[in-house]
Image (cartoon, rainbow, N blue to C red):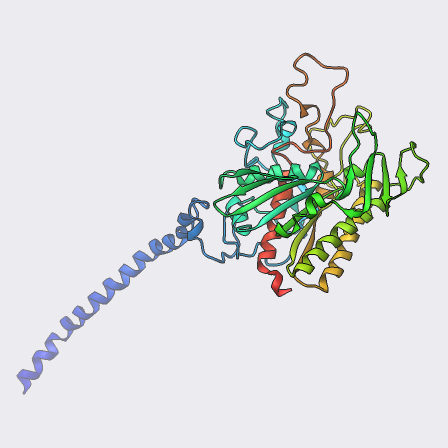
Amino acid sequence: MNGASAKPFKDQPLTFTKRLLPCTLHSLLTIALLPICLLCLYFYPLLHLSNPITNHSSLSPSPPSPPPSTSYSVNDKAYEKPCDYFNGKWVNDKRGPLYNGTTCGTIKESHNCITNGRPDSDFLYWRWKPNECNIPRFEPHTFLQLIRNKHVAFVGDSLARNQLESLLCMLSPASTLKLLHHKGARWWHFPSHNATLSSYWSPFLVQGAERLKSGPHHNTMYLDHVNEKWAKDMDKMDLIVLSVGNWFLVPSVYYEGGSVVGCLNYHGLNCTEIGFYGPLRKALRISLNSIIERKAAKGNGVDVILRTFSPSHFDGGWDKAGVCSNTEPYSKGEKQLGEMDAEIRRIEMEELEDAKVKAKQFGGFRLEALDVTQLALLRPDGHPGAYMKPFPFANGVQERVQNDCVHWCLPGPIDTWNEIFLEMVKKWKEQPRSEE
């Protein structure tokens, strides 16, 4: 008994050592590997985000807060809370534009400022910074996903066309497009997403005729009839972007019920001078009402965006050889909105709010303002100026060179309108019309 009991007692230290050694090694190994594991966890997201466009499908459906240059799912929320995109300031941005005058083939010659010889390029290196948030860099794949199987129509004046040209350039790296011939409009089709963008020339939104150099020298508007040039295709439109304002500033004759009801700066007829604020309000009202009534009658809704007035920047009268000589943005508070520009914007916002009230009785409508007035006001440097034509000073400084201080260079500040446009459409994706 004693001999047998002594052996186990003698072996106890060795047995304990055998048990302790593996545990010790396991603990040391765990401690040694811990920094490596932590490094892997740290760099893992960066490996997957190294190419946000090609790795688009591998991204998490709801990343917590994607950086501005990251592509993400159309179901992602841009921000936790709504952001006022329209109050802020312009800040330097070294990244520059998404395209240039040679990589995009749809830029109108008069907007292709750098290609036309504009010597400075500083106007390309600014971005709009809202007070409460950041606007993500435009992601063309996301936009095309959002408009898949849809028709987005830009209706109105040449600034509507200017914005559409910008959007086509911003989308061009993501997909090929095909120009389609359509009576009364131009359509561009993206076969990869079965998406269509279109441009309808209708500077008054209502029926009318623009003044001509050869005469007549005044506009003619029929304030009680929407322009069927675009309204006849309303059933084919899923999102309508309205743009109006500048053509109301030139001499005009206004009709209602087949009779002249007033004039603006025109003395060829014995008619009452009524200004243009009232006619602008009526034109907007009948256009918005026509959209709501016609879509409601068909039992389907529509999204409508009203782009607010974009101020011009002529040093001197637009019709008196005015130029736009600024080469950098105004700082916040440096330039105040003029009385006329402010009144045009006020009318637009009021008519849009009235249309929202009317649309609520039908449901299925979403109407919002793309309120570019303030951010456009601060960019006097972004217009073509004399470079609306190729190399205007090739033969020396001319006594008088026509300047364009209304439209925007491409690329240029107008690209920001489409960045905000994308954020608006993202928000709508989270709130389908059927839920309203």
